[in-house]
Image (cartoon, rainbow, N blue to C red; front, side):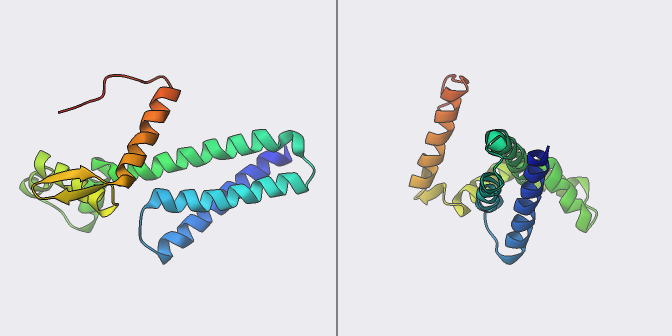
Length: 159
């Protein structure tokens, strides 16, 4: 049972490190948490190893990884959620329906997503078009690998 408590404590340490890092620097929240989660995860493995509880090392690490993945999903959900961004917008001041429609028109939403992909170096502007960067290709390669692993292969979407 101590391994379960240790797993929870090290997850809270990873969140605490993430909060501190987020206040200290801007950037991709998912990458910041991956960094903090890795540091705390290594601490958890060291803790389990030094405590002599090697039997529970694997369950502890697997549970920790699962909880971290849920947290990463939550971060990504909040960053890309139209509902969350609308709530944050309305928190600052009331908006008319016309203002909301203008901000959340299909074209405006697509442009905002493209802007974020460019800011994070997944896309680059080339004349009148956009193209994948090496970082974008690497991410796409990872997605494809996970699709194959989880057997979610379907037809690639092309325009």
